[in-house]
Image (cartoon, rainbow, N blue to C red; front, side):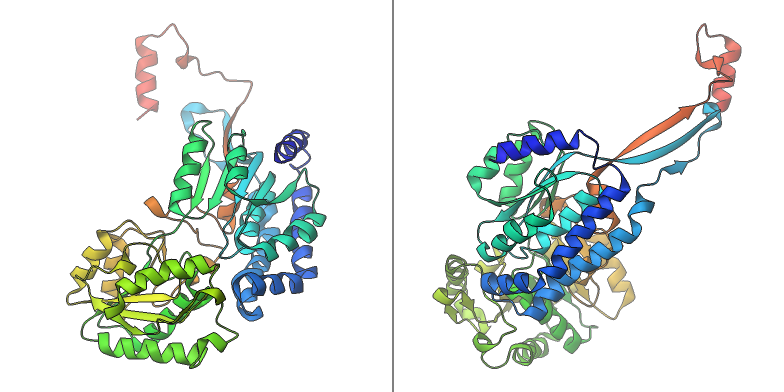
Length: 458
């Protein structure tokens, strides 16, 4: 079936029907219509799969998509225009420009943690770029998949967009096909496998991965503000966010105050019984709860808040640990992707810098400080994908900023115009006139030609 769809899409793309801007805009408006007409079903599905409230689902998925579509529809005609550039005098008479061209057959593989957003946001870029797309949905989000594969599919011809529930076998099959572009969101482990498979055919790949993104709270920070914003970013979607602050580094002079405020903010946001809060979601599976539970057991002496686990309900209480920076915690051995916040206490800022620099480059970085010199130094010297200063997560909400990783946290970027650029190839074109041939470039060469060439090519 998937082979048949791939062939259909390849044949359709070769008709050039996806090239006109009017056609692309029509498809983007179809996606817009789907999000509007099926909003209630999507919100219910997100609640079923991840226990998310309708407000959080709209804030972090549907609303973001609607804004992205509005922005892309408004800007697309401009993005598709030729970009004229100057031409050096030695190439006259000529004009130079670049033009964005679709890749063609694209494969988008999304992740379970934001199953609507991570499937459809790259699709916006693919459609805007004039491509056809197969969109793989995580097999762990069955309720969302039902909506996308039935209702969502009805808004598109399958030779243009096709939604399918992906698994390892299907993805292995598709990775043998000659796609023109692959876009993957998920773990670094799977990302490496996809990159390896794509390399055999030299298929360009964008990888949106993850890692342990740090929040760094310095002595000069507004401690209460930092606690509030870190708790929000950490426990949004119960920590199942690729750019969530995975752990926190805090100056020892403010560590106790910060710990107290973090616990207070958790209570303010989710009440004394988070399990009963409609604003506190659920993990994707009991297996994930058990996996994080094993790490917590190893770090039990450092747990200072939370720690309750109910695997059959996919629940972990908001949990906080605190330890000195030199302590080797099990929870620091891998990306957590859950509602557990290790707080590491440092004595000197250079300790915290060295700690971050010694690890693989994170997808995101969150420095909290009221010292502009400190902030500038941290942003310049540390490697990371993107940053929000004195807050968390929000840099990815600005469509004018690129979103992507660095090193093992990913390669490539998207959002806004960057999504369009990710799904297009920029062709360079130089148009020569049919008169005034520069014969100095043609043999036979002579001394005077060499002198003139040296004069022009300084």
